Image (cartoon, rainbow, N blue to C red):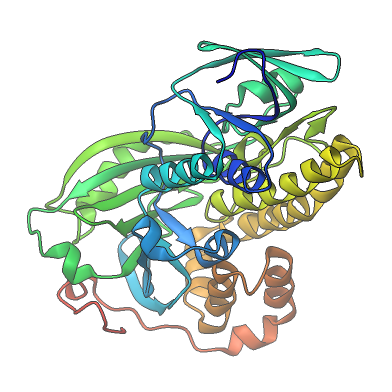
Length: 402
C-alpha cells in the first residue's frame, strides 16, 4: 500500500460481495483496496451450494472453482417419505473457503490491493474522504464499502440503531467410513424439512466428505440446541450414521434488509452487511453478488459525476429488497407447519417445479408466490410423489432417478 495514497474505493471484507465488487471496479481502472481480517483462504459456515443464478452473475466456468454440478435432490421429512426431484443444472456444490479465495484472487489479478490479515477498527470523514483505521495502518478512500458480513462493523458505525433479523445455522464435515459412499451418492443432495423446527437439514457432497448442517428461519421463538439436533440428524440418516463429524461450526444469516436505506453519503453496504439474504433456503451468495453489481454501477456513476452515490444505490437496491420481502412471505407459508408443507407442497410435482425454477433463477420469489397462489386448483389436483425407503437409496448409482 502506497503511503498517503487516496484510493477510489476501500472495501471492508473479502467475501463474495467484497471480492466480486473489487474485481468489477479494478477491471475498469478504479483503484481499490480490500481489507480482510483473516488470512485467505479461511473457513466459513455455508452449506456449500451455489445456485445457477449465482453462476450466471459471475459468468465463469464451474471448473474454475472446482464446482460439482447438482443433478437432483432427495427431499424428506425426518428421514422418511423420501423422494427424488431431478434438478439438472439448478446449482453446484463448492468449497466456500475456496470460492471466496478465488474471488479475492480475481480482484488482485485485476489490479486491486488486498490487505490481509487486517482488522477494521473505525472510520471517520475528512472532507470528501473516508479515513479508515485498521490494525495494519490507516487507509484513505473516496468511497467506503461495508462487505464485512452479518455482524458488520461498518454497519454498526454507519447505522448504529439498526440490527439485522437473524436466522441461524450449524454446519459440519461428515467423513464416511466407506470412502465409496460419496461416489455412490454422486451429484445429488439431500434436504430434510423435519430435521429442525421451522427449517431444514442438508447434505451436500464434497470431494472427500459430506457438508451437512441445519438451517432455521428467524421467525421461530423455540429455543433449539443446534449441536444436539445436528448429531441426531446424522445419527438417524442412513448415509451419515457411520460418519465422523468434524469442524462443527455455527453461524447466523440476516434474513431481512436493515432498512430502506443502506447507504449514507459516500459509504454503502453490500451482501450480508446490508441484511440481503433470502429466507427459504438462507441463500445469501446470490444477493451478495447482485448487490455488488448494483454497487459497481452506482460507484461508476458517482466517480464520473453522473449521480450522488447515496441516492443512486438506495434506489437501485430496491429491486433486491422487494424480492426479499416476498421470500419472507414464502418462508412463513412453508415453515408454518413443516409436516403439512411437506405433504401438500414439497411432494407435489407442480409446486416442486416452481421452487426448482426459483433456485435456477427462472422464477423470482414474487413470481413463485403468485404462481403457487394462482395455481391452487391445479396443484391440489396434481399428483404427489410416492415415497421410497431411505435405506434403499444409497446403493443406487448416481445417475438413477427415483
